[in-house]
Image 1 (cartoon, rainbow, N blue to C red):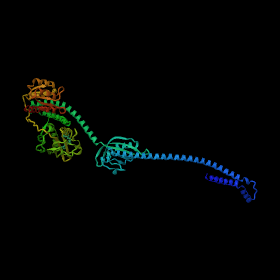
Image 2 (image 1 turned 135 degrees about the vertical axis):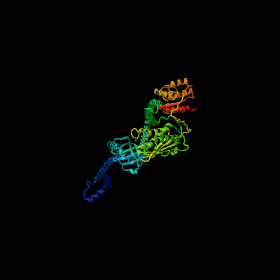
Image 3 (image 1 turned 180 degrees about the horizontal axis):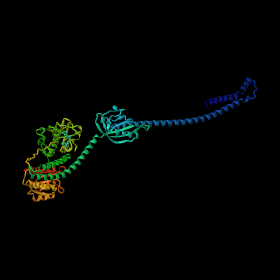
Image 4 (image 1 turned 45 degrees about the vertical axis):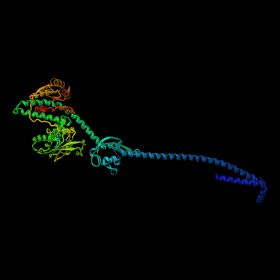
Length: 608
Ligand SMILES: Nc1ncnc2c1ncn2[C@@H]1O[C@H](COP(=O)(O)OP(=O)(O)OP(=O)(O)O)[C@@H](O)[C@H]1O
Ligand SMILES: [Mg+2]
């Protein structure tokens, strides 16, 4: 285009020059030319026209060329503009895409930060596995709970799966990896680095890579050992409640039945001489009934019930008395006593503490069938000396009682189960497995603690801590004569016909004048009519209309000086203690024989 333009301008300039030359120097020029060419000058006068025409043509061609150029240029310009617009758009799109990518990158970085902090700050342990079960990530909490660090485990399988959990765990992993089935709250066990076995709850899900292909699993492990302990404790409490209800029901009915039997045997034995043909047999029946009542006592002890007469007692005196009696029955056991001087009193039900001692002594003796040494020790301690225990003792002062033998001892498995009711290693008929269960229940029921230390072949030590009482020791006057008679008037209140029946006869045999009442209402009526004659009331606790507690208050209103002996086979928690604390003079547990009844009555009537 540029060349055509130059050529046209060149030709046009040339034709203009020729035209001017042709016009003004026509002749000279023509002559000159004809001289040079030796030709006639017929056409020379039109030569300038030729030049002019060619110049004009050149001008036209320039004009059209210019037009063409403008068109082509505008087309090119248009195309260029289009290209520029396109370019700008592309650039804009690129810029936008760059910005978007930047934003997405920032978003991804942020999301990663959030996830990392989530994994880091989760209260549960988190592990990210590949599909082969190798750990790629473990959270700091995992290290805290299980002990391994990320450096120790990265790219490796975690060696914490117990063999006995392998099968169930593998089934879940298979479903998770192959089907993508997530798992929620799978309760199982895992080892820690230092070999402890933890209860854990596992939740897991599979995750995919950017192409949507399964890439690994994310596993959350929650340590539920504490929760399991609480659950076990709650179950234990529920079991205790159930045993308590059962024991209460049995104790109430059973003890009333046995009261009837024991009372009648007592009456027969009272009437016959020891030389009588059936005396020994009847004595055996009496013993069997007493064993039966011991069983209900053990059950009540285990169920933390049957705590009736709570008072400040001197443990030294009780341990001494009971161990001496026990020593007389097991001559091959040598008893060593080391009692603390100035031992604090403890607030306890004496008969339950005696039950604890007898159970421990019998167990120790059973562990030394060929005889041996039994060590008894008492001491004043505080909660500060009760360190490193599985329990956290309530702050305060305690009295310690140690009962140690050099007998067979126990293995670990036995020790774990000794406080379970009905757990026994003794042959059928020799042990009910209720001894230590009741010891445990009674100690707990008194706000105390019990420890056991035993080694197979080396002997066993039981240590009991009982909270100290802030009252001084209340002395009990024990009467040791066999049967002591009296002549006062006693009113017997009981809703059980069999108890009234036998009780009235026993009292009469003992020399007393007897008034009777078959229920609470009748008791209040009889007492209000004859209160001046009544020296003592033997009062049953559980009666359907008006219970022993209310009867007690009503008769005390009528005569505040009247003496009352509470009698029961079983009392609902704390009821007997309540009445005794209101000033009731004593308590006798059914079933009782004539001897026990006579002693108890005299203990109360002899007191001023
Ligand atoms: N001093 C001890 N030495 C060795 N083993 C003991 C000792 N005390 C208890 N045991 C073990 O604990 C078990 C449970 O004792 P526990 O007193 O509860 O029941 P038991 O003695 O078998 O039966 P029960 O006391 O009801 O007659 C015993 O069977 C025995 O194996
Ligand atoms: Mg026992």
